[in-house]
Length: 427
Image (tube, rainbow, N blue to C red; front, side, top):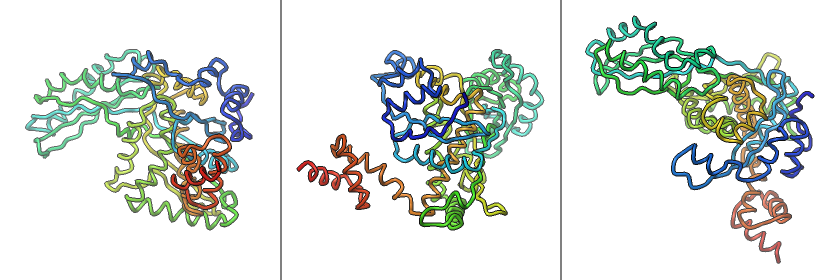
């Protein structure tokens, strides 16, 4: 049975009903239903093996975003996040984009960099040449440390050498091992390979090796996504589609030219990306670091997305950014819910996972800009944020909806107002 990511009436169901619907649709394996239905899916013993000084576990909401179609394939997207409106916005934008065929993606091979820093060389450019002459031997040394990866078709592919002739600490030479890490994120692999070649590099350059570590600017491991929507799809009851596109292009241009706006613009993109990275047990801090470094690669911090208008008036959105995520290693294998998240996604490679992740980031960016170009971001957030405020004020059951309705009608979402409205309701 073909997967249908639209999940009709999903929002109106209770959490147990949603889980049952996903199981009946074959999206969540039956064996994992109990794991998702109960709190504490990560046993203390497993948590204790993941990090040090464990005293318990900390849960966040796990949701699924609907309506996504990527390269003609329906995808249900697991997201772990605490901020209201993110899942709803991503799902709604995916629904709009779906009318034009969905998202189309591509990616580069999973190449990661490991850096070996060499100091104490009087002839840094000569040292660079020396390292490059030993390229074949160094690659062989690196690959000797991970024969399993080589057997899977990966391994060290090349060596780059960067020279910094005049630093406050003197000349510096930095060798980069370029490693195909296949379906791993690759940090441990490339760090181990850097250690393996360090002594040889010291011997042939006469310098001293200091750092041997990966770079989180994974600019050789890029994922891309694009979408196309017509003005009619973007129209609202108050704004024509053409007016919405004009506003979105103005919002994008603002982010492209102004780093203060770009920081918030890109944070909105990461609102879509981080929850999937977290859900699948990948390193969201590495993804964040690479994303923002990549956004500043020209020397000017700018938007990770581009938006433009086609000849026929359609809106075209694109994204290209580093996406160092894996299906093996780390928490992707040790965290039970990370394994379930990967089953829900039904991905067969790290590249496919990366492409879905950036498609969701593009959808999230589209949703934020559409809101900014129309009623403003606050109105869209208001009802969802109001629920958090109502619950924090002590509302339960039907009281929550009543308090939310009153605050949204007033367009005023505040804790003190929620407390006041709750007191009035209980009288």
